[in-house]
Length: 298
Image (cartoon, rainbow, N blue to C red; front, side, top):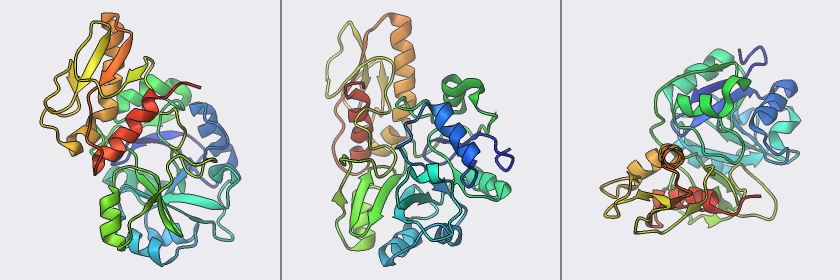
């Protein structure tokens, strides 16, 4: 289906992606239309290995080091486009760089091998809404706008990939690889560039990952008008992690937001409250998603 210009949602280790042939302008246009995605928001290109990535992008020493340590895995590199890359221009949203990743999910890798092309695959949800970590999230959000959904069960990482640029090393979006791991691997503490004046990578919009109901953060007590999502010793109707485990919270954050929205609708609650999550390691990526979910809507 991908090779014929279709849209196929498939699981990666992070979230479900909405995949299309990244070299086919019409197929890439279908991604933007299905998601209602602004045309200035670039897409991540998924490939099977570093060799395939180097046919699309120019790697420097830092990029090769990070790829050697973290690929396959939840790391996206934003690098200069290579001459003759062959990608549809909409993939990069007119930028001179491309975001590229080698996913670790065995099922995602089988999809990429079968397609035989670079696959542009943003999260398989309507733009600005909660990212999908189960096949039913995709079906509920995109319905018949996709040609197929490959059901691989829940995504184990649960938050999107960390996106970095390498010259100099800076984080464009926190994600499944904590900054501390990047610093350890590279010997350099990455700078933060997660709210730039112009979009350089996906997931940098101030309002993003949003449920239907407004979200309030750092809440420790239940109220009658809200669903409280707990964490650790803060108990709620739902929880990111009873034990306060950031890896468990990252894996569950989008699913719990989906569930909280549905529960609030059933109970007539008007808001979703979320308990505090420590701002370190994977907690940084979790809080990034929660802050964007709670941001004022455009």
